[in-house]
Structures are given as structure tokens and as C-alpha cells.
Length: 279
Image (cartoon, rainbow, N blue to C red; front, side):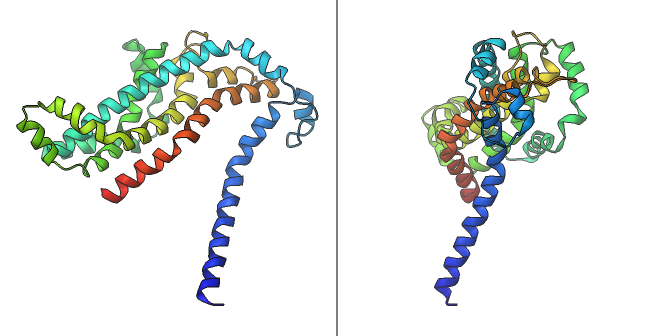
């Protein structure tokens, strides 16, 4: 076998491996979509079979039952609040950590990114009690603010690696023109962070929009603060689970984040690659 043939064989095997991995990840999602069109009895009989007659009524029932558009608005408020704080504070922190390098900023950098190593389950009870004390539990804005603490460490890490690719001469030029530090950041530096900012936004949207555990702990069961994922859980009972409605509710919950990911995945790759190669 010559070198050219060997390369072709290796390429085919590599693509075959990628296809197998893709099927493994996509198949559960496909089952969820497929079962959302089945009646309950059909799911119980054979969960992996195609629906004999698609049940569109599942969607109309779930949309009305969980007050879908109200909960969709709740998700938007929580996600936008979380994303806005994460992007603003992590990018500003990364800027100062990179431009003011000294012993204190190195310690601050370590303290900021260390929470990435702490599992949420180890602090969730303490967090719940603390949020009750400062009245941040049980509200949409309060839940969005709590995501700042969990999202800022990773976002700062990403922004910091990318920030090192931006020449400091830009800061000096802005300073000569009389710009203050915050003006330099918002008007000169932040626009250059577009690719990595989109990366952070998309990754955190996927996380916050589809999160289950933190909303379960922090919001009540009313539609005023409930999220879409929590609404899907209401169809799951200890003695009886309405699988057809649960699958339908999960489809309605995750589809918006999947659409965002599909349209913006190119920017995720660009942002990650730019930070990795240039940093």
C-alpha cells in the first residue's frame, strides 16, 4: 500500500469514526423528538419505533398546559441577565488582569478561575441559604445574577487567553488621545473581542437555558418564575409519568438553544481557535 492510498484509508476511517460518534450523540435527541409525536401507549410498547400516526395534539396540549410563552419569557429574562453580567464582568476582569500584571493580579487571577474546580453539588446547600438571606432566590433576576458567579470563572479564563493577543500599543495610543481606562476598554478593546464574546455567549446560553438543578433549587413552582426545563419535569411523577407530554415539553424547551447553536457554531470555533493559536 503506497502512501497516497494509506492516507485515503486513514481519512475514510477517521470520517467513519466521526460518523459513529455523531450518531451516538444524536440518537438520544432523535428519540426525544420522535417520541414527542407518539401517544403514551405507543411509547410504552416500543420507545424506539417510529410513530404510526404523529400526534400533533401533544404540542398543543403542552403549550397550553405549561403556559409555554410565559415560561419562554422567563427563560429569556434569566438567560439575558446571566449572559450580560458574565460577558461584562469577565471581559473587564480579563482586561485588567492582562494589562496590570503584577503579584496581586496573579493572585486575583488564580482566585477568579479556581471556582471552575469546585463541583456545584458541594456548595448548593450553602448557596441556597445565602441566597435566601440576601433575597436573591425565588425571582428571575435573582437567578440570572446567580449565574454570574458560576459563569464568570470560565469566561474570564477564555477572555484572558484571548486578551493576550491584543497589542498593548492600542491602549497607549488611546491614552495619548486622552481616553480613560474604561473608555479605552469599551471603545477600543471590547469591539476586538467579538469572536471570543460570541463564543462565551453561545456556550453560556446553552448552559443557562437548559439548566435544571439551579432553577430547581432557587425558584418556586409558580409560572411567574418557573423555567421551561422545570415545566417539563412536572410531567414526571413518582407513580405515573406522562412520557409523551414530557418528551414534547423537552423538545419545546431545548429547540431554541439548539437553533442558536446551529447558527452560531462557526463563531464558537473561530473564537476558540483564535485564542488557542494566538495566545
